[in-house]
Length: 417
Image (cartoon, rainbow, N blue to C red; front, side, top):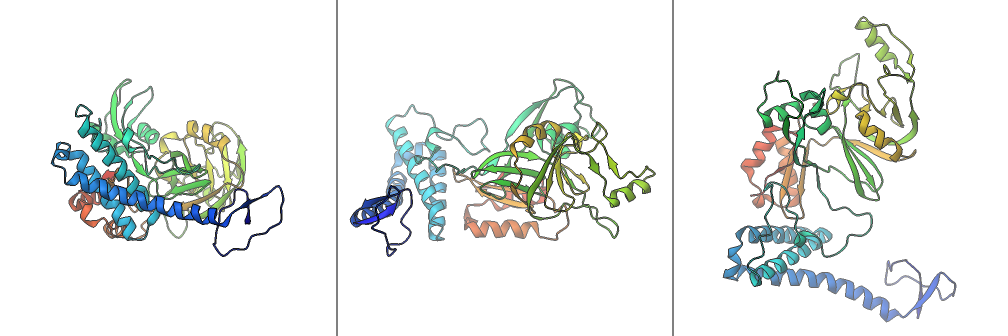
């Protein structure tokens, strides 16, 4: 007999166990521990084996070709699983093996019941497909979130005082994209009730258990709690302007929240005072709370010198590079975001102009932004590097990849072959 702490997991078969009896310990036979470990290993192996058998059976079944889209999706998911597994990324591989098994079971069910509609039916063929069969049979552990893409295609209905710039800021898209999708002239005026198509799909660039990620190229803030993405918010960031006198670019690096202030007083940095004078304005050392204060109603201080997360009196500046380095949020979104954040919350500002994701449906998405701060990276090279890292070269439509890189429209696009 050995004793293990309740709730702990066995880390090493050779670890020593205490025989001391206490309320925190229970006695467990050694053979039960070994059996549990063996069963866990066998269970994972069974999923892989079952998936391989099920996929092979369907591939050899002529009737399955009645559902070409579903078989294509199944083959893609199965290939992703094999590649992750062969690349020793077992956890990801097992996840896709399980999805392949689920898809196989649904196709088999469809063959038995012909009237069941195709798995791939969806109002938007570009989006990752969501069906009952695509939901994982296992429940992810609390705090895990397997979502890779946020945002969507949609239609926005114009409200009073809306302009193209203001709508683009609300949705987290560029004005150029909004005009292009809706065939609008650069000087077009919007009418109340007018419908505007948009696409603000984005790939989550990096995860953390609890805290904030800000990716500069996509001008978006991602907030996580217990590993789950709680919100993704468009922001305004530092201007690319960089010369001997001023550097307004938002700095990269890790930080923590040091204070939260409602109705803040703005202490004007000396560099901005100098800029005021150069533009013929009166230089002020501080500005009290009020409608003229550019910090708006809320300010969140960070450990990065001079860098705040704050509301703004210029909501149309959101989703642009126009601040003096701070991170601006729209007043309405800051109203909700401010109470969620606690002092000492961790965060990181990163720079990823190219992002790639393989969805749970096995679709491959690429998102490319301009190199706003002129870091000099080759966007094509970054995209190729990501494809090679995932070992999905022959699953990618390379013409579509090159087109997405060339457009740099900041939208997650499906580049699956």
